Length: 202
View (cartoon, rainbow, N blue to C red):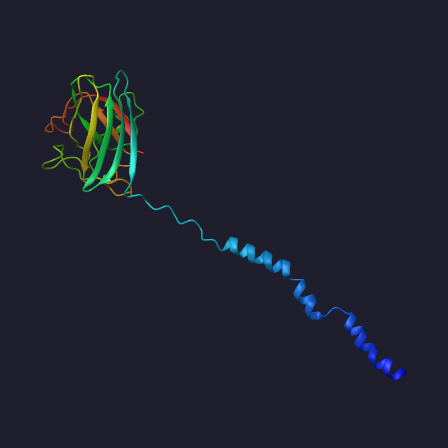
């Protein structure tokens, strides 16, 4: 009987001790879950770099230069062959005709808007009509005001682009309204007189 008890004792001790397998499985459960959560977070794709916008819409708010009253709110939209410019102007000379151009520098800070530089002209062409022959990329049709000095704009700037950083890109450049009509002949800017309103295409 004593021999049977001695033989059974190791089995009883083994039964009371926790198994190696259970201890090994239980301990890492929480850390494994934590690693997986961390891994999921770090595996998320990084934001892709911002791509240049070629198509889309931009705006410009034109403020009057010193001593003038002309203002405008314009929208620029990519269109076949160029950029379409639409919007409203006010504070113009009643029934007046005014030169309207994209200028090379997006800076309207000077009181007379001289800081906007000359007409936007990436191809170094002479000034001219926008519908025939050589002309600046920034040359557009004159704006004609009604008897109240208001005008509705719907003009296509042919050959320019909206975003993308090409030489023809007009984003960040200025748009200017002049006191007189552009005659499309006089060099370098059509003899359209003082700049009465200026805004930056943003």
